[in-house]
Image (cartoon, rainbow, N blue to C red; front, side, top):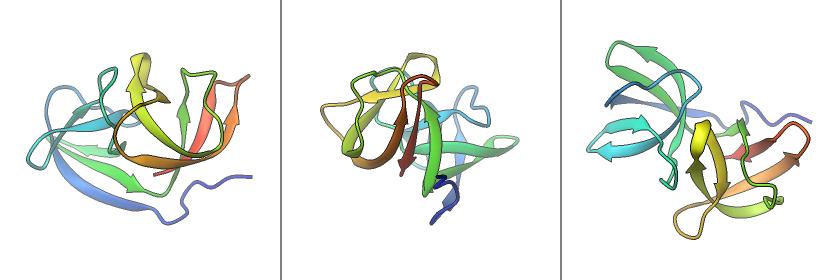
Length: 111
């Protein structure tokens, strides 16, 4: 099953640093995102780029790389991990993890 594009909402943000399509992003300052560093709270995934602006999917289903073999389905606090992956967090927003593929090291998440 695939939950990509369910309830997608994309917002435009300014970028700080090098943000690429597919990057997990975090807020840096007012209306500005950056590529999420390890342990930062993610706000979405960059889905488009135009100069200093990025289209960031802030709601909806996305498949993301997962660095945490302990991740299970359900509402979970997520954070960025190294190498543009997600991991379980201990603070921040909860996201619905609808499936985890440990062999492929991916998770389907509803932001």
